[in-house]
Length: 138
Image (cartoon, rainbow, N blue to C red; front, top):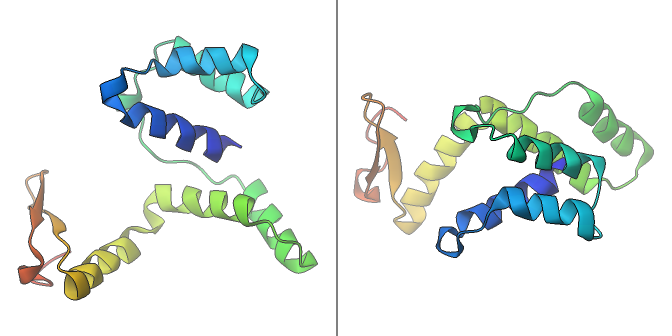
């Protein structure tokens, strides 16, 4: 559920041209929608308090419950794709997907001419055309 709320709010937030007040949306959903929950209460309270998201690192800890659930689902042969994917997203947020993502970027550049974004060691990202595919350092 947390992953779904976060993704939904992220989609709404991305539509800057609509000027959506995400805190107001979460407050409205909290009191007048079928998506009410304690998790939504936590989200609405955090947004209402003015927590500056730009100072929050996008890292989600793995405390073990998600792992246990995914392992138990496999052992019992019970499909639990949403909970398993939410666990994988936690791992990705911890940087555990960085190497794979870099390799995917290089492969996409190789087969489809997709741009590769590179960090030029000055802290800034730069998009490069795929013509320089695997030249250095990613």
